Amino acid sequence: MRALSGWGVNDLNGDLAAGITLAAIAIPEQMATARLGGFAPQIGFFTFVAGSVAFALLGANRHLSAGADSTITPLFAGGLAVIATSGSPHYLAMAGMLALMVGLLVALSGIFRLGWIADLLSVPVTTGFLAGISVHIIVSQLPSLFGLPAESGETVRRIGEIAADLHLTNPWSLAIGLGVFAIVFAAGQVSARIPAALIGMVLATLGVVAFDLKNRGVEVLGALPNGLPAPGIPTVDFQDARALVPLALLIAIVVMVQTAATSRSFPPRNGQATDVNRDFVGVGAGSIVAGLFGAFAVNASPPRTAIVAQTGGRSQLSGLIAAAIVLTLGAFGGTLLANVPQAALAAVLMFVAQHILRWRIAVNVYRQAPGEFALILITMIAIVILPIETGVAIGIGLSLLHGIWGSTRTEPIELAQVPGTSVWWPPNGSNAGEQHAGVLVAAFQAPLSFVNADRFKRGLRDLIDARSDDVKLVVLEASNIVEIDYTAAQALIDTICHCRDKGAVFAIARMESLRAQAALTRFGIADIVGAERIFHSVDAAIKTLDPGKPQPQEQDGIG
Image 1 (cartoon, rainbow, N blue to C red):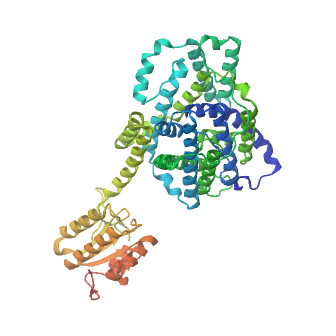
Image 2: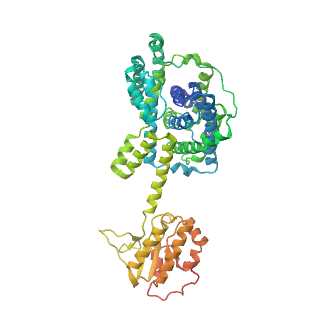
Image 3: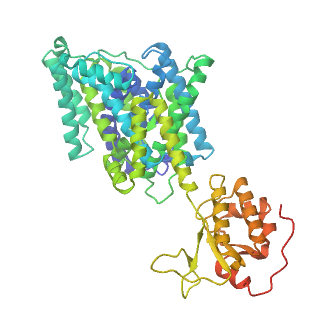
């Protein structure tokens, strides 16, 4: 219960205000998100309660709100729809099992301190992912907004069918949806603390009752069953569980990325470091509890977390207060929700969809890094056109390839001494720097690994060969080499051999990384180079190994 540590009575007012506000915002949002995934609205309530309670017990962040989330709901709903009919008992069981699997993956990632996984998605790929999810949400809610028959299948085909059915639009449903959207949007311009979605939903419900809109074709939720779900392990056979593994991995990565981003955006006020791994445990436990109670996977919510912080929340007690309110409504207030129009919930999701679009980031990427803007477009198009889980997998793959591609572009560069200093720096047009006769100082500004080992070897050989027989001392400035794997170690050994074949001494300077130093010893490179030729600075290497001085005899044994 770290997120409740240090709590005092003076914090009660802040947590109480934040909890009530959070509940007012979560009620319509959780209903709409559950409906987006093909679940009854009360399932969204139980998902929120599971996420809130589990995170309060096991998480670290004092403000983070976990529950049903529109970012991952289209992802698992699309994946489950391929296996089971939406809303069927089989579908619900599969969703519960998926929640257990996602929860275990996220929680274990936190236990084994794998928070670095959250950095697998670059900002452009994440932006494209959210844009694609936004399109999915909008397309899925258009039928309810216009009062049209529900559509299913691929997104592009659904767009065509909706366009063909526009003449069947119910004006009352459209008016309700646009009205609720306008209320939520306008309130958002004033203050995020205003529970505009709840206000809009209440007004829409009153309008349905007052004007008897059910008899005018406006679809409503209908009375929801009261009571609490019974805990139990979802009944799923081995084949179905195995089919869920790839989807669980994808969703777990997305959950970790969003949880880490949310946790880092709201760090502890006492100056302590953000504990992302502990937050993974809390969010993962939320999915496990949700799965045991027949709900679906949870995720951290940046907007709800911001609301808790902005309304004076001091600890996770605010989340527990909100969970108690939502649980009471889900258990005993089913009849209160009978006349909520489907168009109102569609409007809430439409607002969420436009809210998660990162237009400013996309524009900045387009202006500053046009090549990376292509990652946004490709990821978005893949998620919209292909099965959504395939699109997400492509986005993750693009993000990893982009990172690897950056490492493969690194070339060894020759350094020059800044006049009057002991600093060695890449020469430029305004300051070419000074060279020492018979000395080549080269740097490689990336970790040495299999993806760039050959480029390193060829590049350094070319620098040595370009100086012909003039080079008597080669110093590798290694301050940026933080890691050396097996393939790269063999390339470095080959380069040392080539250097000695040219009659030059090879030395290493400024290898600051402890991992890289350990690799030198592990692969025998330290013995090959010699401890007397490994230095803390380039200046020390040149002064000690001046090509004009007699040098120690070279060691044998280079394979």
